Image (tube, rainbow, N blue to C red; front, side, top):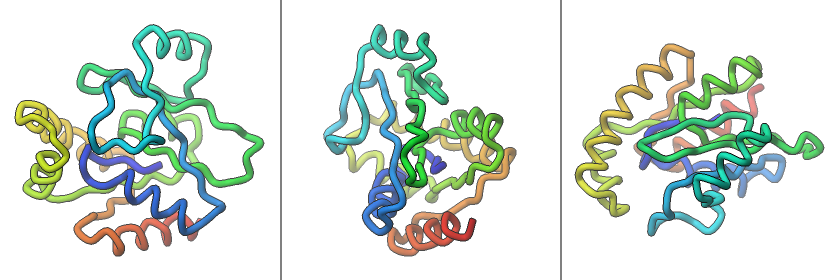
Length: 171
């Protein structure tokens, strides 16, 4: 699992990992938020509240939670797929997964707050949303330490991607 504050580069790192290694696949999460300008076409399944809740009520998510007023959920994996699945989820979701699958690898990608602020602003987040995300980042950092995430600083994309790849392949 790859977690970390919004804007740290999780999606970019995950795409790099999957391009590097065909034995890796990323789970595409569902969300009720609207697409942002920087979202890739395959970033999320964007659904309304009703669609999300129907899927959730049918047991369609391995984990789900609410974040800044929107719902996010990871669909149940296809256990017939032989690839190793990367979940790009929030730390609370990571806690749900590790309780069910203690063998899961937890990786927390982070950057300094000043860099995080710059990245969030650069992708078009409004200043009030940036402040909420920075507060949430502090909460996530604390929770990640509590449940023993491996911390990777993404101040250099190639270096961070390589470090994560080594963690994943070491197991």
